[in-house]
Image 1: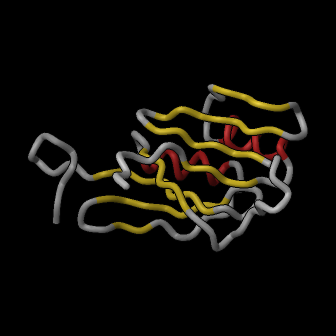
Image 2: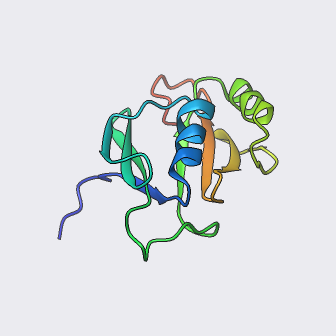
Length: 130
């Protein structure tokens, strides 16, 4: 088997309307594909070359606060953190590494997301290696 890329990242949600409010109104994502209806659906948000999905159509697929995580690269880290705080989003203290800034936040079901900003490295690529 030769895995070529990540097809999508997906989170199960318990309340589709509440989850869509978070992903679309708080994070500002635009739904690119919606399969289902207002109560049971699979929703896709295309971001750059990847796709973040949410859904609630599989009964054995449950939201899990200790489950997977997706990192969302932002243009302005401080502005993103400030916006999330104005929406009272559950957030761990932000922290800095040698190559980036990160803040771990939770969606309404407790799924973790990382708000992420790469540091400029001076090499021009933005993909600094430590």
